[in-house]
Image 1: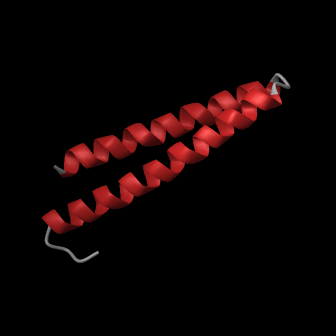
Image 2 (image 1 turned 90 degrees about the vertical axis):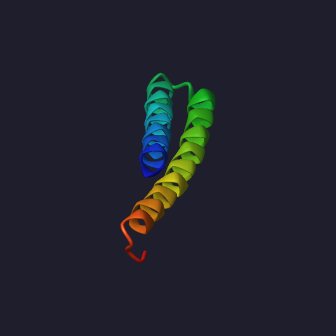
Length: 68
């Protein structure tokens, strides 16, 4: 189970990174409307990735018998 939660966190981090790259590309082309939308999506993905990483960390620590 911990591997799956770590994998999910990694996937969410990659989605956030992709959205950040897309936002930067649109801002670079002065397409600020689309850039702002990608920035908003990046923030959402980053928040979800953080939550998933915290959960994965907690599950890993729990499976090792450590207190978080």
